[in-house]
Length: 165
Image (cartoon, rainbow, N blue to C red):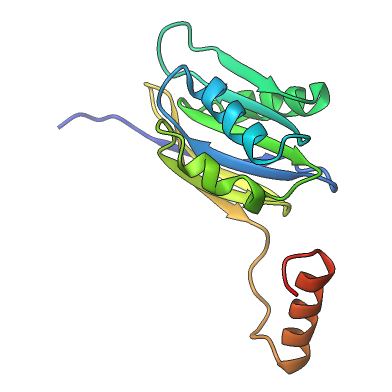
C-alpha cells in the first residue's frame, strides 16, 4: 500500500450576474472544436467562451468561443481549477437549457457537473499526479418547501422567460 495523499480544495468560480456557467468533463483534444460547434449549432447568435484543459501532451488550456471577454473569463477560471480534461463555458444571451442536450451528445463529453447562474464552488481533489473535479456546490442550501404562492410564482417566472405557455 502506498502512502499517497490527496488534498481537497474548494475553488470559487467567478460567475458574473448576467452570465451562466457550465462545467463538464471531456476526454480528447478535439473537444474544444466539437463543443464549439454544438453550442453554435444550438443557438447561432450566442455569446460564449469555452476553455478546455488538456490532461496530457502539452497540457494547455484550449480556448474557443464567440466573445473575447467570455473566452478570457473561461480560461482564467479553468486555470484556477486546474483539473485535467475539464471544460468551462460561460454563456450570455442564452440559458444552459438551450445547449445542454447538444453538449451531452458530443462524443467526447463524459459528464456535466453543473449549469448555473448561481455562485459556484468547485470541489477539487489534488494529488501528486494532478487535479480532478469531485463535484460542485451550486448556489445555497434550501430554506424550506414551496407553498402554493411559491408554486404560482415559479410558474409565472417560467412564463415570463418564455418556457411555459
